[in-house]
Every structure is written in structure tokens, then in C-alpha cells.
Amino acid sequence: MTWETLDWEVLDRLRETFLTGDKTAGPYWHTITDLECYDFTYGERIGWKWDAVLRELKASGWTPPAGATVLDWGCGSGIAGRRVVEAFGAGHFSRLLLHDHSQLALDYTEHHGRKAFPGLTVERATTRDLRGSDPIGLLVVSHVVNELNDIARAELAELCTRAEAILWVEPGTHEASRLLGGWREQLKSRFRILAPCPHQAACGVLAAGNERHWCHFFAPPPMGVYADSGWVKFGQRAGIDLRSLPYSYLVLDTRPVGSALAPTLLPPAKVVASDDPTREGDSRPSLQLSRLVGDAKVFKGYAKVFACDETGVHDLMLQKRDAPVLFKQLKQGEAPSLHRWTHENGRITRIEQPTTTEPE
Image (cartoon, rainbow, N blue to C red; front, side):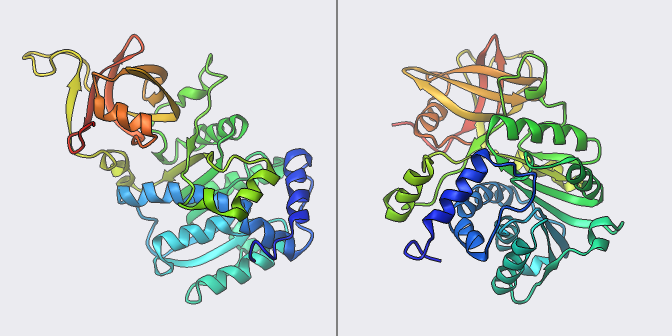
């Protein structure tokens, strides 16, 4: 598939289905061409979201269970399963299983999976795989949460009870994110939550009074996308801002090793604050692990951020003089997601930040 062979009318129809159609009614793939066009465009953008999640996981040192069977549930064109296998290497897994309610999607995904990973067993999940009792090493779920009917929800919930680890990525919309948060609450008693949450407590976004909030992040598109005439045309025709790639995600693991995920993402650091952080007998609260959610709003001399920690979610202000390095990163859209800090009355008061970069 190339931009020259792409069927733009197919994409127009798919877009209309995504926006207004009843996606729970049944398969919306009519031909293999539908899947080829989707995978080349919409699917590739989903792949960029997976790339962002997988980069974070690899940077943390996390790996899926060795020799795991991967089940790509609701696989569609198979972009999620392929990205996961590519990230960790086909040799890390024993099988890539595929499931979708569309046989056409399974035809496409099975073919492309075998082509991409000739040394890996790639096959459709059987009834025994889906309804048996054998453990599932890694359950991969992508962009399905707002399409599930009651039967599909029950099936997925049962598969989750058999999974050793789960990687789940959804659109970064208000609806999809909050639905995914509901699954988090349902599953947290069995799993250790590795990401995005920096804690194991209840989801602060779902607390009463936070109905307008949602947990979402932004993946960077690859270099050159903005200058690619094909992508520019796609963005204009599909009504998509190529600069914005919002996503929500959830990483769950039953293995204790997962507890090392969040701290390893933080670089060597020092504590900075507006007052004197070196005073003796300091009885102030210890620094909390917190994750930035969504986009920061940067003004002259200060920034406003939305952050999650074990006490809930908070709208916070960071003054430039308190953490100039982080302020510059926020301004440039390059700030790391995880931080250790304390906050009082809506202001970040003490913060741990990298010492290797100096502001200009």
C-alpha cells in the first residue's frame, strides 16, 4: 500500500462509520482493501501511540513474561500485536494469537503477522484459547473499549483473569479514558498497576467532582510527518490534526518485579524549592511520585499542570523560579511525565528534578 494506491473513498466511508456508525453491530470491514487502507493510515497512527507506550516500558526495564503467548484481542488490522512483538522481539514470545469478530480482519492480520515474524507461530485463537483455563502470558487490547457489548465485555473480563500481564491502549477521548478507568478499578485487586498510575490507590479522575477530567497523554508523531504530502492530505481529508495524538493506556502485571517500573523512569536528581530545602529538622511531607496528565499550560513565569498521585488528581501551579529546568521542558513540550514533589494549596513546593540540564 502506498499513497498512490490508497483508496481515499474507502477511508471516507470508514471515517463516517467511526464517527456515526454503530460499531457494536458487527464487522465494518467489507474487503481486504478496507483493512489495507485502514492499516496504512488510521492503524499507523494507532501504532504511534503504541510506540510511545512501549518506549516508556522498555526505558523502565519492563519486559513481558519470557516465552509468553500474546493474545491480541479485538485485533482489527493487527497493528497492536505487531508493534508489541516488534518492540520486544519475536524470540521473546512463543505465539501470537489473534481474535476478532471479523473473519476478514483475521485473514489480513494472520497473513501480515506471519510475513512480519516468520519464526513465530502466528494463528487465530481457538475456542479453547478464548474459553479455556490456560494462562495467557500477555493480553494486548487496543481501541475497543467503546465498542464492547455485554457479551464482549464478559468475554474480555474472563480473559483478564487468566492474563499474567495486560497492555491496553485506547483513544485519549473523555469517554474512552473514563471507560478504561472503570476497567482499572475492576482489575486492580488482581494486578499491580504499572502505568500510567504512579500509585495503587483508587483512580482520582473517577472520584466525585472530577467528572470533567480524564486521564490522557500525547504521543509524538514520527519526524517528517508534517512535511509528507500524503499525511498532510490524509489529515485534511479526515479532519485530523496531525500534531495531536492523544491516547489513554493501562499496563498491568501480576509479577512483583513490576513494582520497579515507576521509580526507574526518574533520573538522578536533586531537590529544589522556593524556600530552603537544606534546613535541619525538616518535618515537611516526603516527596510523592506524581504523573503529569494531558498538556501543561505555560505562562510567563509559571505553568499550570494537571497531575495524579496517591492522594488524587490536582490542578497545580509551578513557578519558573522554583524549577527552571522543568519549566523550560514544559514550555518546549519535552517534560518527562513522572516526577517527585510535594504540593500545598495548589502550588508545587518541593520538587526533585534532573541536574544534567541547565536552562538557557
